[in-house]
View 1 (cartoon, helix red, strand yellow):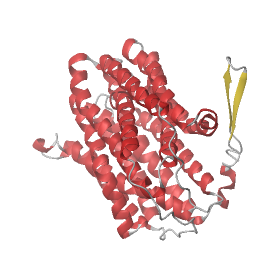
View 2 (view 1 turned 60 degrees about the vertical axis):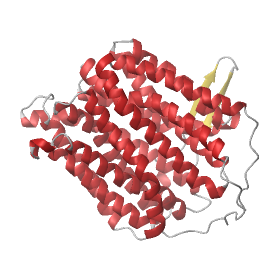
View 3 (view 1 turned 45 degrees about the horizontal axis):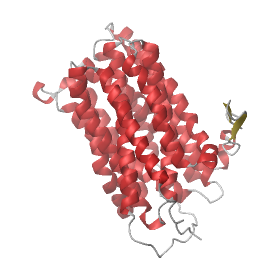
Length: 438
């Protein structure tokens, strides 16, 4: 039995009370009770997390830096992935509806593997192609991930029963977080291992190139498993509401503005914290991986706080306060030249974003009529991608001219603005409750 009950207590000196969060319905030891389709999807999701969000996400930026590129190129590199996600999110859902969820996931898995394979060949292609080659890798891999990730969510919904649905999604989030954590920490030590094997320095690209091949092998294993899956069996679900009102453009637009600003602030760290730790603070890849892993460990358990916090203050309150918390996390990145402050900020941002994401999803879904939920969340995903892409492109040039710390201070301002937008939304009259499924 790995997890039987997770209890988190948050002491509140002002209230002289504690909040106890108990997750008794996440028994990893009774994994066998989940439906076969759900177990297959969870295994694939966990393997992809180790590869794509763990090893690949950490090493690809460090590899690009070892190829001689600077912060401007890193910004463009990260932006190409964010903008690809923004562009492909709606088409990926449409293709899944047309050809089937499993076929769309297989297409996504194939493209993801292909994109990850492209990157380690950067040094082997003709010199004139080497600048564009990593960007091509980002575009192909992210396109694949859009097809896989966006269609995974409705696949899990179709495979789940009403009784186990909350457990299924909770376990998927935990496995994805644990997979990312393991992949990040493991990826951080791979360059040291391969540097010793090759007799090279960790400043050379060779150790990172071999580390990227490890992520390719893991992703390929997940894809092979995906090929062996049968079409997901759809369980009985509640009937959809046929009557719906006009699209709520103004509420959706305000929420999209909050999403754009809050993610823009976080993107300054997500895109440039690792290059800052590497080039300015001269931390080793293993230490960078450890710091990121600590933050990812917080990200694994942070969503477990959402139900109790939302029950007391609401999901909108969580979205607003996580933005204010980001001010304290970005502050040491902007003002402290010591690695401990930067590490605290880097780890904290990962945990805060993991707390904000489920609160945002629940807040939006509860305020939308069922007919408009997919479109509204698609627009939210596009806002996130546009925000990350814009900051990645402009932030690289900003950091090259004024330095990474000043870029993080700009991130503080953006998160403050995003929290202000959410504060204004919460001050508005509560929306009329939407029609719920019978």
